[in-house]
Image (cartoon, rainbow, N blue to C red; front, side):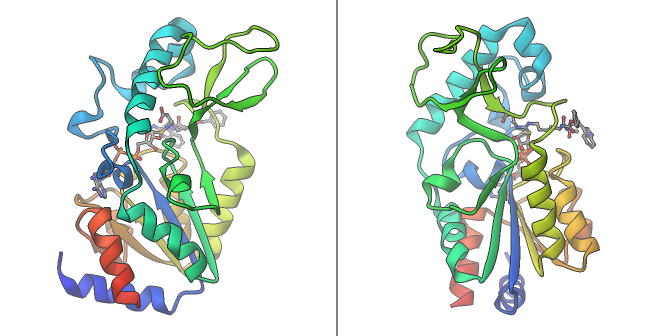
Length: 245
Ligand code: BV8
């Protein structure tokens, strides 16, 4: 990673007042959480798009819950990495800082981030589809599978946004507002393929924000980024933080 990219990004961040960050599965990769489109993104013979849908859950709730139980088992054993820690620290370092994540692993909160918008929900939460009640469930392994609602006995679902489902409109509105007002947007560890999340950095660029991408690989966002830092989030973010101080 050319040092001048880090210096350039640090100069932009130093002068920024309002910062929005969008993270994807890549920021949790160095913690050991499989990404969706990486080599370990597969589970048995399924793809995320096959299982993270209301249709898959209606067809086979046990299979879908087994997939989430497998992921919860992995996530329960991992810790936030230096990339998560830097973003948690920046929440107080900058006057106006919003962290928006597509991840459901809860690692940003574990690293100390509080001003956090979880666009796609959280793997440690269940929701009763009939009552709408959301509850935390940290049982590893889950038992029984599928879990049932204590009050109505109905089948609980993960409190997660599946493909084909709308996002929480209030959370999405806050995310677009943060990006529209931002001086700088960082896109960290996202393949920029999943919408509407992938539109957030583009909306920021349209409002005049400087876009910085941190990713080992190019993505559809790269042509719209002012600065592309090619590398791992757990390595680049600490170097960027050091260049700021
Ligand atoms: C919706 C929860 C409509 C599940 C997830 C255009 C507009 C709107 C919608 C669509 C559209 N085109 C298609 C759609 C439909 C769909 C979609 O976007 N499909 C994609 C596949 C084309 N979108 C939806 O269905 C959304 N809903 O629009 O509904 C609607 C509206 C109103 C009312 C009713 C309906 C819902 C999308 C949410 C889906 N749920 N997550 C779960 O987790 O179980 S998304 C899921 O995939 C993940 O949460 C994650 O967000 C996403 C994967 O993206 P990434 O996070 O970017 O991860 P990925 O593995 O792809 O990439 C990792 C990146 O990290 C790579 O670039 C890699 O290079 C990099 N990396 C690797 N290591 C590192 C690293 N970077 C840094 N450091 C490293 N060490």
